[in-house]
Image (tube, rainbow, N blue to C red; front, side, top):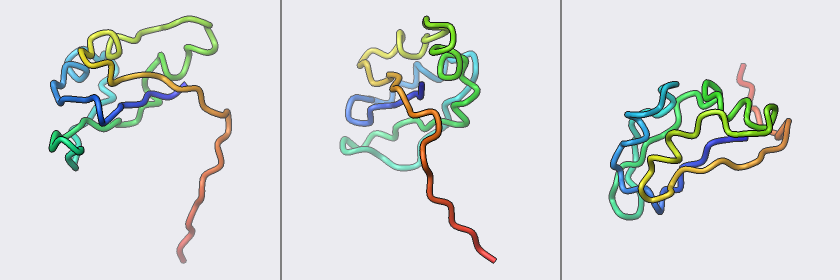
Length: 90
């Protein structure tokens, strides 16, 4: 599972940052379409829900999703080993 922030729905209230016990949210750098600076994820692998929800078959934490007034936070299934492009420079 991976955490996803829907930039179209986020209004920048930052409630997610206040309640997250794992501190995986960091200040964003660019504004969305509504000129709101949306939070970004800072090492989301620290989130127990992202790592362990599938293993235990239930929600472990999910506080950020529950407190979000606009339902801008959700989890998506991901492939176990998604291919990524890597650039090597010499």
